[in-house]
Length: 494
Image 1 (cartoon, helix red, strand yellow):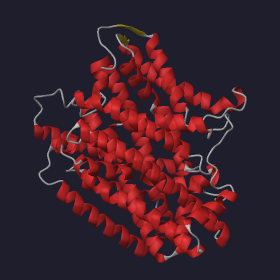
Image 2 (cartoon, one colour; image 1 turned 30 degrees about the vertical axis):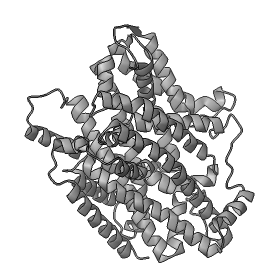
Image 3 (cartoon, one colour; image 1 turned 90 degrees about the vertical axis):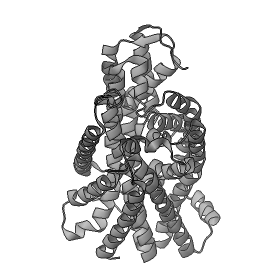
Image 4 (cartoon, rainbow, N blue to C red; image 1 turned 120 degrees about the vertical axis):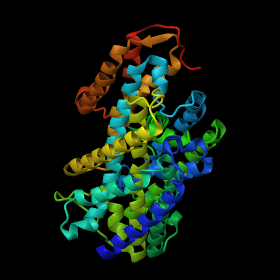
């Protein structure tokens, strides 16, 4: 398929996205931008959050990740369900009771302004890096298959994506994101489903036959029993639970969408239905990884490799999808574009919300006019868009692994202090850490974890940290906060 055709597909999808955004953004104001006027139907939020949860990483990295880890990633997916139950029955009731716009306001009311800014800062760093890299993956593939042939520098398509996302979230904010996410979820799922169907048709096999034959080749290994491995089953399950709690329950981007629901009851429906949906959706992505690898072996289609001859996992899906047929190419490109937009639109909005509420204190400055708030909000929105572009361009020379692993490594380091802060706030009664030491602890804990993860094999008899590094990071933060705390009249979990 020609690069011009791919560009036309991209433009058509973008126009459709802007049409939806236009209708969602009518009569919008600051309340619409930050909270969606708290009138979002729970089923719309739940469906759109599938795409937001998956993004381009699950879309391309999970199928490719099967090449190196088989089905062991499913242990993380099982943990997701546990994490979502905690969010539904512990965190959501707290957020709705306090009527929060920024969830880090909780830290202010529990510990003080220093903790609020610390939590917000770590969210900004984590989401800015994580979401920018998710978007990078989609831009990277489009660049490799389209823009590279035009001799354009990598930053040009990245800039185009950023400008488009900035444009359709500029007015409607979270409300526009919720409705456009439904479109993006649809195409993410459709692209994967169509690719599997085409592979099965080409191989003249049923999905059951494919999985049976792939199992004999070791592609569907589900349980890693070596406790020293980063993919050990119980580490995967525990990590999945805490990843969900941290990256969804303590994440302004994901919770801002939940908090647009009309009531706690509807938000809880959203979270529980989302958790069940993600089990089946992730199974589909893992199955697509098996289908891609099996098809490559049987058909003789070579897997993409780098200059050193190593398989590039993140290129497996696009390389085979482009080789199957014109239709799979079209659907893949639309799914890829959907992944790029879903990776950044909600995050750009939530970063703006967090900065405006936790650093500029929009909720406390009652004398600040709505017009002034709107101008400030737009300037912050543009500033974060620029930072997005900078991260995407800077990361390009360092892309040499499955991006899903890189993202979880980043999350393990940056979300650990949030996990420790919220755990202490929720479960330790009548004690408050010394405010001046909270930022210090929040920096020292991830630093120690980063050093430990780099040298664990040498120091711990071959033990290799996986996603459970997040748990350790949270525990170090928790006990350090406990050590520097003193009695207070405040209580923990209410």
